[in-house]
Length: 82
Image (cartoon, rainbow, N blue to C red; front, side, top):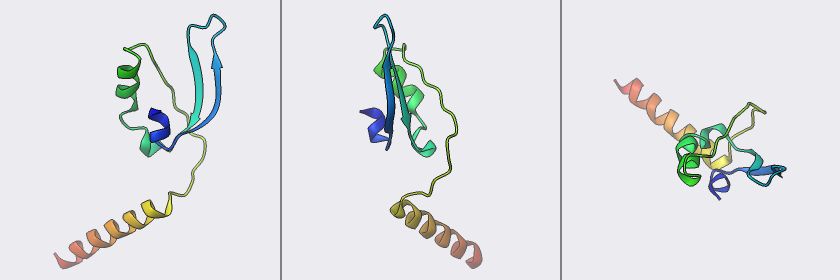
């Protein structure tokens, strides 16, 4: 649930042979992963761990692109006014 809130797409999941743990491979935008280490420790009582590796560079969703463009435009106008 916590990874789906972060726009994660599950790619694979495997149970350990002894059934003691679960490995889940998920693709999540890097910007959405900040704070996840604290969250997984909290959810698993300190036993969970995760790793990250770069996969690809993808375009941001249109609404995020528009927010970034508006922020850039406002900062540029403030800088020019100063």
